[in-house]
Every structure is written in C-alpha cells, then in structure tokens.
Amino acid sequence: MTEDELKALVRAVPDFPKPGIMFRDITTLIGNGPGLAAAVRLLADRAEAAGADLIAGIEARGFIFGAAVASRLGLGCVPVRKPGKLPVPVLAIDYALEYGTDTLEVDPDAVGDGRKVVLIDDLIATGGTAHAAAQLLRRAGGVVETALFAIDLPDLGGADKLRADGVAVDALMRFAGD
Ligand code: AMP
Image (cartoon, rainbow, N blue to C red; front, side, top):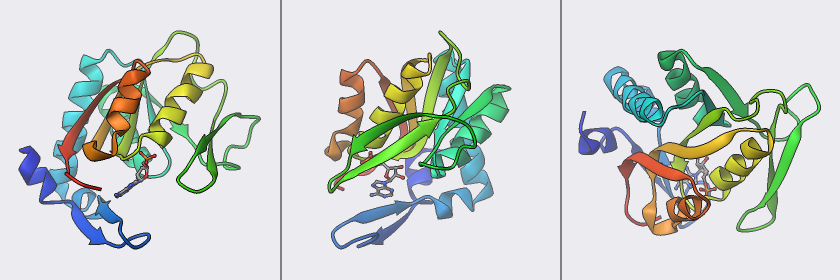
C-alpha cells in the first residue's frame, strides 16, 4: 500500500479537540483490514531493520500499533502510560504542553539495561510526548535510537526535536500543516 493510499484511510476532523486543530484520526485506518495490516507490516519492517529488542507504545493509540508490531516480530511490548495507571512504583517524567504540563510513567523493570527499544506512536506533532517517552525509557535502562510513527506533521518540528536528541525518526505518512 502506498503512502497516498494509507493517507486516504486517515480521517481529517477539523477543530478537534479545539478550534484550529486538524485532528488526523486513525480510527478509519485501523478500521480497514488491509490498511491496518499494511501499517503494522511497514512499521514492523522498520523496527526490525532498526534492531529492536523491545517495542514501546505510548498511551493510548501507540498501544494499538506498538502491540501489533511487537507481536509480529515476536518481541515484548512496554506500555508508556498516563499517570496513575500502573499498579507498581513507577519511573515518571513531566513534560511541557502548550498550556501546563503532563506526565508519562513506565514500570522501572519493564526495559532492562542496554536493550534496544523502538518507540511507536500513532502521530508526532510537536514531539513533546515522544521526546519525554524516549527520555523515560532511557532512564529505565533502554537504548532509544529509533522512533516510528504512522503519521508525521513535519511542519510542527517534532521529528527534528527527536533527531536532535539522537533518535532517528521515520513515519509512514506525512501531512502538511498542523
Ligand atoms: P506532540 O506531543 O505534540 O507530538 O503530540 C503527540 C500526541 O498528541 C500523539 O500521541 C497524538 O496522538 C496526539 N496528537 C497531536 N496532534 C494531533 C493531531 N493533529 N491529530 C491527531 N492526534 C494528534
């Protein structure tokens, strides 16, 4: 499936979750069997080429792709969670949003020293979320050199932010604008 064919399966919803945002909705992509299969296969090929030992998915839509990719490669999957969801003491990181801050948490025993973790999420915009997740996984002992996304919004600079911190970024689709 080509990038344009995949892009045609992503629904654009204007003014969600607030005015001025064009929400790139993967509900329609994952609801399409060939589309989901192609996206998972393409992400898995890239994760395998990056030498992944472990896949990390960012809550919540990153879990959908992350778990499918991990399963396809026979690897484990680490959930990078929103606060208060894990039932054990956590490693946590706060990161800046446009207004205020948010937090991500991970099980400190979920990674293991020196394991190569490939980070997966549905979409990278400003890169704040993925950058925080990469730092958190590094604190947990992981080697984080690759992040993969279904969608990149390159005009928002997120991929460049990750690259500046030594993380190679790849995405299946790019949409101009925000
Ligand atoms: P950011 O931290 O700015 O890179 O935002 C990334 C996170 O927010 C991802 O987990 C996306 O699911 C979500 N997100 C941000 N912008 C959009 C958008 N325009 N459409 C859909 N999801 C978005």
